[in-house]
Image (cartoon, rainbow, N blue to C red; front, side, top):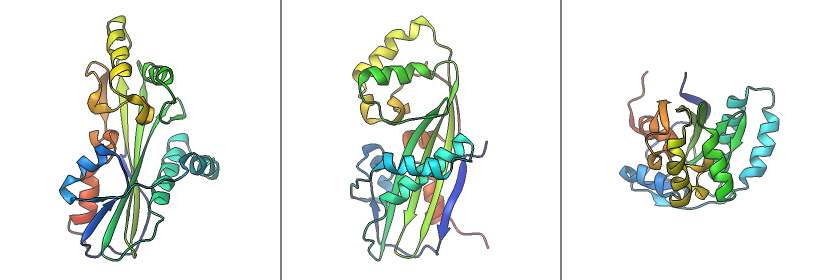
Length: 213
């Protein structure tokens, strides 16, 4: 399974003196701490963008369709007044299961339904990233596949405890991988940090690794 896919790119990345993370996510802020980013929260109508681009890409397979839509959400977050000398990073994470997009649950009941639905099968997590300056754009997405164990009654208390204690309402798909009971996940295919919310190694390589001729 290819786990990193380019979506759109133009221009050449030149020197920057400041990084701006266009996200209030504490997880992304921690993952990018090595860049000491300035934090600037942005609001976009994610559901309107999702509805539009899921229609635009209707002929694609569901995973590709949703992933490209996710990229457009990341791009939209960076559509602000850009300043010279600053690199802007925006990202979006979606969970895909049974050819549906699982966004943040509206309540704890929906969160529990989402979480229980993963057992005994595979689902995907996609994180899109937009790297942008006044003269440069690089948008890509990373994919990870998670295989959950078959459900058994001994996991019931762990499921209920997670929903009760771990605040799943602010998380796409109703969970944060770093908080899950380790008994839930049988295998992860792809980068763990894609699931957490930012494929950091890929971001760093695109910013700092020497370019091959």
